[in-house]
Amino acid sequence: MGMTTEVEPTAVPEEDLLRLDTQICFSLHAASRAFNSVYRVLLKDLGLTYPQYLVMLVLWEHGETPVKELGARLRLDSGTLSPLLKRLEAVGCIVRERSSRDERSVVVRPTPEGTALRERAVRIPPRIMAASGCTVDELRDLHSRLARLTAALDAAARQGAPEPR
Amino acid sequence: MGMTTEVEPTAVPEEDLLRLDTQICFSLHAASRAFNSVYRVLLKDLGLTYPQYLVMLVLWEHGETPVKELGARLRLDSGTLSPLLKRLEAVGCIVRERSSRDERSVVVRPTPEGTALRERAVRIPPRIMAASGCTVDELRDLHSRLARLTAALDAAARQGAPEPR
DNA sequence: GGGCATTCGGTTGCACACAATTAAATTGGG
DNA sequence: CCCAATTTAATTGTGTGCAACCGAATGCCC
Image (cartoon, rainbow over all chains, first blue to last red; front, side, top):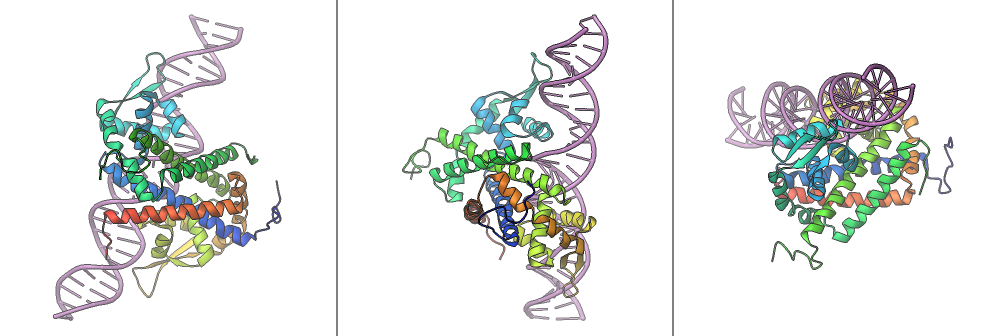
């Protein structure tokens, strides 16, 4: 829709909207990097990066998983996953092998060492909660808010026309 | 006190905490990338990336700014800012020049073209709001939550390593 | 004036993130 | 059975993000 000035009954001036955008834009970016930074410190012990940890979380919960499904779950494409999985394989956390059923497909499986990492990973969540100063319930609330927001943004990205709710 | 089972009065099992971590961890990562993705589409018109837009927002609001201050405001170090500013200079949005007062310092100034971009940038915030399905108030709320969270995470990160002072 | 730590920006190396392209394997139609 | 479209990973190129290091400029101290 091509409306420019009085889209809303609240009629927030453009200047203020741009200033608000500065804040939202930055705070989300900053929050993501701050979380990343805290995880980075905790994950150093495990020899994992933050995205690598995401992959291991999926493998710990669901066992061996095709690359395709990893990409779908984490919303990462092969351009990101391929080198990441190679590094995980290089440090011995996973093995990759082509499926015999479908030679196009590559299945990712945690090694015993990769599985063993889980024992040490269980110490991370309590530390994250401590660092965030949030309770379990607050984090659950944040999760649901962010999930809703992401769903809305994804929907909007797929189609130029925004469809609220 | 016991480190393993009774960290909290609620006594959430480790398994559930790891699963919750999966969700929080992923949802924040995903939300950040989803926002990034929506901005990317809108910013394509302006020829800016998301972090470049963050820099321009600061320049539009505060005028010429030393690299040092840009880094402080956006919490980005020179390793990220240097190449980013070079690209902004290459496309003619900014100029960089060393301060005559202190030859170590570089001041970043928007060019007339860079300043003119602001006219087109004011269209972005309403679209972001539409895509997010949030009201101005909800976004303000999100901003304050994320800012609090980031502050807590930053503080926790500082505790591990002592400050350079 | 001569050292010396500090400050500031830049560079390098590594790891995502994503768009676009490529290559191999599979499937379906004739 | 052969060919064309499709699926699936991998590769390439660009742009962050950050740690570690470098070199020039500055300030401070004797």
